[in-house]
Image 1 (cartoon, rainbow over the protein chains, first blue to last red):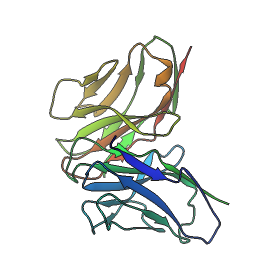
Image 2 (tube, rainbow over the protein chains, first blue to last red; image 1 turned 180 degrees about the vertical axis):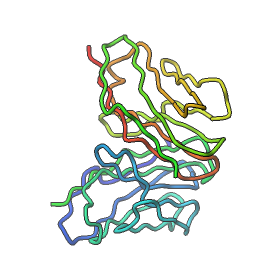
Image 3 (cartoon, rainbow over the protein chains, first blue to last red; image 1 turned 90 degrees about the horizontal axis):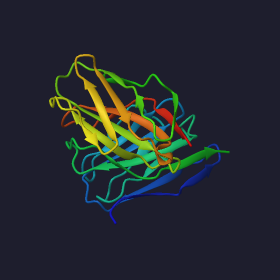
Amino acid sequence: DGGITQSPKYLFRKEGQNVTLSCEQNLNHDAMYWYRQDPGQGLRLIYYSQIVNDFQKGDIAEGYSVSREKKESFPLTVTSAQKNPTAFYLCASSIRADSNYGYTFGSGTRLTVV
Amino acid sequence: AQTVTQSQPEMSVQEAETVTLSCTYDTSESNYYLFWYKQPPSRQMILVIRQEAYKQQNATENRFSVNFQKAAKSFSLKISDSQLGDTAMYFCAFMKPYNNDMRFGAGTRLTVKP
């Protein structure tokens, strides 16, 4: 079945460390997105990518970095510069960047700083 | 920038009854798309229903329907014959056409009681 796979499901990070969250899709979608979810704040856009080798900052990109070397993959790195990284992270995709049909989401990664 | 407001942080309903979740949004656009997403305890975001602003007819999907009031910028979700599996967070979302920037409300936590 086609879908989006996020791994790991739970991730623990020590302060000062960089960590990378994986997002892989087999839907042949062009566009991919990373959202952060905090209690009471809904979802906020971190980065998005419309095509391979291209990505744009969202509303809260500071302290995060991404790459899009393959159409199927859009990993997110949470750097030590991110001051409050504990959150739930969701990856999503859409068939095209200008698609009006909504997004398909992965099942998320819960990141905790210890 | 567009904003989406869900004024009910939590709601509950008895099984088999009907419940309505509220959503308002702010935009100067005349054409746009609205969505309701469901996030069950598994945390996977699932598209429930989608509405195109230029269509007068309210969207329906089985037990789920919307009341779209364009002039009032209101987009409420009605769940009929509530089932225990409807227990979830529900997010309202807004998107301009051909624009990869989906905006989410803070969510409403719905509990269906047996």
